[in-house]
Length: 424
Image (cartoon, rainbow, N blue to C red):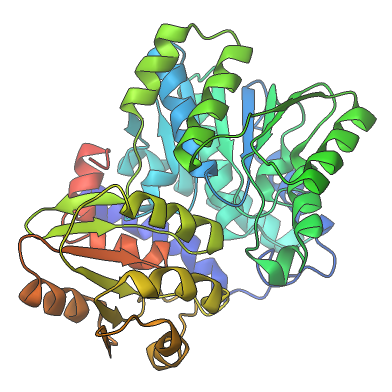
């Protein structure tokens, strides 16, 4: 269809900007990270400040921020509010980043906004004092424009990475700011200690807001409280829960209650909330689960979910990004598997760990009798697992959101998502 072709042309244009020389990229160069917010501010000024006049909920954290963002979106929608949300990364299609009420942005609407923005993007690259906007920054600008077009009242923003210098932190007066939890991830960018990581994420806390966190580590909680006291911000901590699902639900419920949403709508929104590749069952006999866990805290959550299922043997298909702490993931999940199929994702923009290297690091964690094999083709790994697995077994794909997303295309191809503008 021509509409889908226009959408892909627009997407190619944005993603292709990665080959342009710039003054730096947020994901690569953190020598002077404040320039990225200045760059975003310049670009938004250039396009008429579409980010203004929304009621914002801003969500940061190492794990759970996407889930809480989705829960709040569904709660607000259930209550009759016009709500938009921006999240990342997308699972199958780029339109999954931008949602208003029950639908993602339309492919045609996306292409129209990109075409309208091209003169301003040209100007930013030609005259911008901090260089032209990155693909992520342009996606965020598209979201703001779309939310304005759709006359959204509320916007739920999921932080892309960190918080303090993330492009989403350009907003000035959110109603709610939140940090789900803190753990080791993106240490090459955010810092090697939990305190440094927490301080970066705490950059979302702004004067005049209400702050919520599910974090339980005393040193981090103390830091968040001190920042809130300095800014005159109301501090709210989610009580200790039995698992990650409990923390996510309690945080979403507490935030919704604070902004005046009735309990009946909170209950309805939570019941409707679900996200792809979060321990998502896509097939049975054998049971096939797609899970995007890609750090220590998320893989622990995966293990907790795993314990809720009964199965005979576990076939583990795993691939991990090069930049991740591989051992902190492997040591938790490898001992659970009867057959390990190590592979890679095929995303051209991110480096994947070599399957051979992951296999070497996995050997010491294999349980007795388990087998292991490597595949450069992730779909060949899946075919192998499905060929051997029986009805009572489970095939679990994990270790990378990119890997889980690529596998999901088999059951939910992009054409289907572009047509329905829904993931399920």
